[in-house]
Structure formats: C-alpha cells, structure tokens
Length: 97
Image (tube, rainbow, N blue to C red; front, top):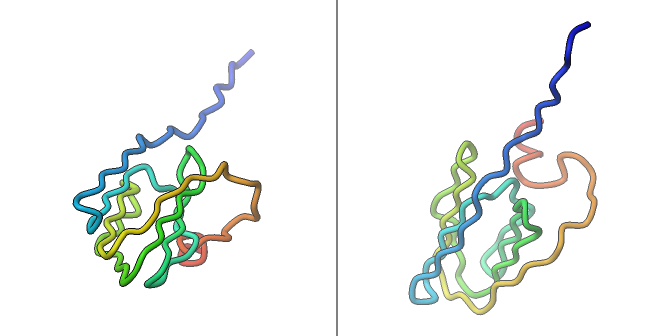
C-alpha cells in the first residue's frame, strides 16, 4: 500500500519595515488586491494589510519572493483578518489567469 503525502504550501516569512514614514518594505505578500496613490491593499498569510497615505508608488513587486516596496507619505498601516474570497480576485490573480 502506497503512502500519499499531502504537500502543504510553505508560508512566506512576513516582515514589515517602515523608514521615516516615506518607505515601506513588505515581505510575505501572497497577493496584491489593489493600489493607487491613496491606498495599497496587500494579502499576506497573516491577513489583509492596508497602507494608506498620499502619493503612494509601488517601486518593487517581486512575485516569486512576495516582496513589495512602497514609497510616499504613509498615514496609516492596518491589518484585517483575511475573509474568504473568490479565487484570482487580486491583482496577481488577474495577471496570472
């Protein structure tokens, strides 16, 4: 009788580094829901991360490592437990259909 191992996806390490309220480096990002100059909404294994501010620009987005770099005037950063959502609902899901 063969033993079947269930492979679970590895969780990415999640870090959040803020420099002078002007630069934010985020790792462990699993999906980008939306972004504009006032808000960036990211999904991580720890929940939804929303960064709000003014003149926000996404400088770096590395899909393989889950790293995102954002620059601009940071006003607030908040987490919300991730609610169930449809497949491919985020920005990255739309790109890789």
